[in-house]
Image (cartoon, rainbow, N blue to C red; front, top):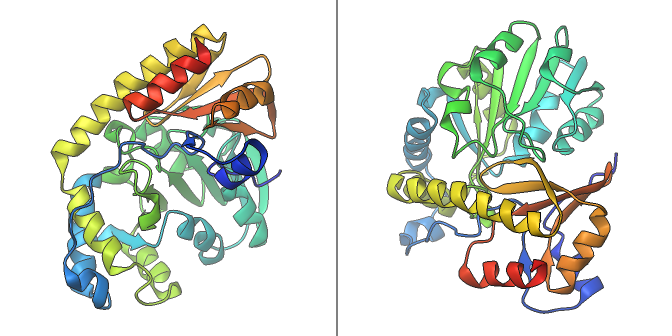
Length: 319
């Protein structure tokens, strides 16, 4: 399968011209946490273990788990690349359709990879990979169902990159020792450029992963921003409420274009359209970039607009 991604705004500009683009192709929060002035040390000093431990504590409180099970990493993509090399190679079952980097990284590391349409098809695998809630269709599984799956496989990777507004879905507070959970900072807090993510796992697996990454891999600025942002619970509550309401608004707007909701999460919505490429081109003509998929000629995924100007443009396109 082609390893396509959202966020390829350069391609949009090359085809449809420069201008004031609204990038709704990624599912990254369009209303980012407001970064304050950072301490000088965040910019000028090497990251300290004390700064990392402070982030571990704050992140563990957010995730509802033991800080000893939390490893900050330089983006959620790092463990996706690293874990297939750390775990014993074997047969992997990967939820499909889903985020395509998981299967690609496993194959590159020598795993035998099979697609699974649901978690009921994963029993007996050496490794199972589930994105919860799923990207792009928003399918979700309760923690108990995933804990049951963990007892039937060698290891279970649960990618919770879009789970921050849905703590009820997270396996982090009760994860068995053969479970590895991936979390993204950039998506919910809207700061993808910080390049921060987390691995949540048993301490022995955390130690193996820590030994495999270079020192100071997470920047001082990322440590400080992550610590301060993840402690700002008032902002997080407001962001969750906004996206819950805005997702319904986007669904109603899309229905006016004859697009039918397929699913989604707080941060993006997925629609069935008569022609995905035509829908993408219609939006792109007004400099709104969306996501389509090589395995579907009907699905269009849209991130949630973040400002009145962005909503106004969407309404002008569709209405």
